Amino acid sequence: MQVSENLQCPFCGQTFETVIDTSTASQRFTTDCEVCCRPFEVVVECEPGEILSLEIFSE
Image 1 (cartoon, rainbow, N blue to C red):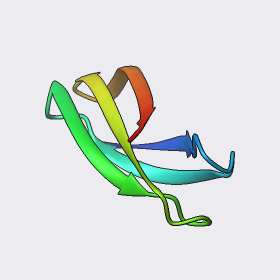
Image 2 (cartoon, helix red, strand yellow):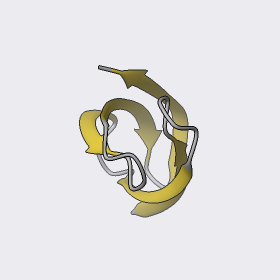
Image 3 (cartoon, one colour):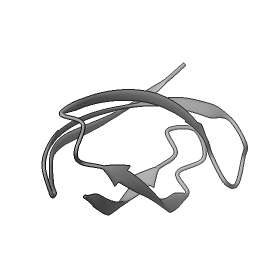
């Protein structure tokens, strides 16, 4: 199941929406800010249909 979640860029502070697949319990991925284009890492812990925790790290 996919869940929409808002992410906030650790560099410019812009918030944008992304979709997280909650069928995978533990995830780590890199995404680029839609505004400043700088990459940052996202670490997510999930249960099906629910995000338990989400952390953002600047690289």
